Length: 73
Image (cartoon, rainbow, N blue to C red; front, side, top):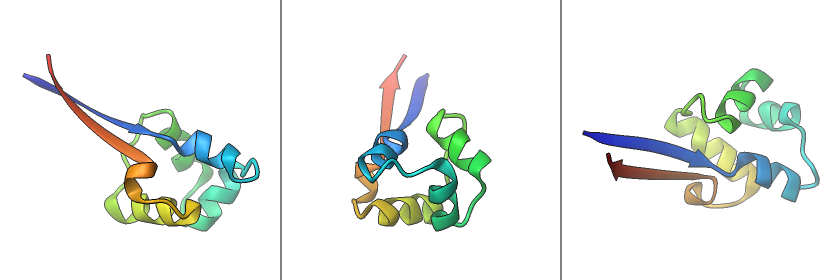
């Protein structure tokens, strides 16, 4: 059995980019603030197009925002 985790740096990137609010990021990515909250909390894995939009907002590669770890349990 394996356990998969999708980690993200969204919160850190928001603060590194002029303390961008969740609402500002949501507006740029075309989603609701609640979606950004869920992504930051690790409760929601974004679609691939949304992940790219978030990465492009911060001008970093997608791996700079999201990291996928797969571990054997």
